[in-house]
Image (cartoon, rainbow, N blue to C red; front, side):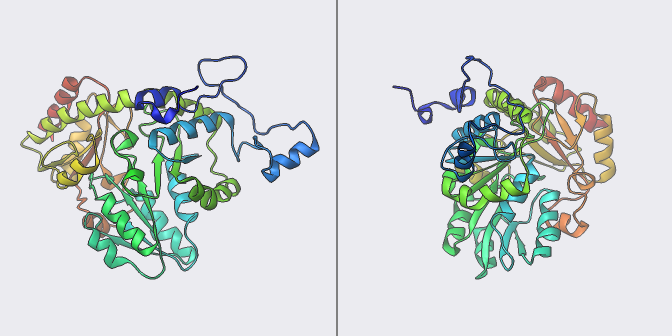
Length: 394
């Protein structure tokens, strides 16, 4: 009898999960570059469209290569179902608009990626959907913000850009009390270091552009959760609004999954060493890294994360000092991406979180001196030397 993939270890799931070979017996997954699919008869087309007969109809509805990616990521996450999307932001957008209706209320953690905040603050109000931001770490803040029409909670943990970590299980309990669905953006932790569904979340979203690709090539996103929830809430929404992941990108992301655990484990080892070098430098006012014991939510991290990840943030006191640091880097790239094999650093106030008002940035502690750094696969010694040299010039 064939083994149940759910019994496999993570490493095996990442390499062989969802595998579906054609009669040619290819080792690398097949890439199906086809917009549409043919039917044996008009009756077969009718049965396919009605759902009576399984099979593919149109690339916007599904694709064999994309299906392998969805099944492999669901197996890794421990989810019943995964729906792939064209980018991380399309996953966040769909996860919200699939759930929310006019007159509904959303509660969101205050610390969010700039585009997420734009959707909540600018887009949702156009459809009569209200939102409240809360300081996410304390579950009491979520409970106090609940209204009779509260439908969904959204949180990033760790959050972008200052790595705030919230107690997912406790927030999930509050959501269940009021009948809301909890959406967790798990991109910084990756599915290797944190399992939000196991902690009580209803939906997990990813920007597969980040660690899952991990080599700066393609965009992609994913929504994961229980089968019935994803079918009832997102199947028609995704089909008819069209944020489909291209088969080529699906294939690239499958190749990324094969090495995900190896890469993020090594990146995390490097990040710990670089964070120590940053924290020891006299020019640094504060360093925040989930792998350090001085992280403000170290107790929460110990309860729900198995690794610190590869992203850190540190405060150099002023925009001028932050820019001097960035301009002095010789190995690390100045870039707003993260999770890549190459190390990257950015100034969030003028890049990823530029669209936020100064008042909102200050509310999450993001003053002009902060730098966010994504640590890659280079030599940790070389990275520490590059960062220390740049800090000397800051």
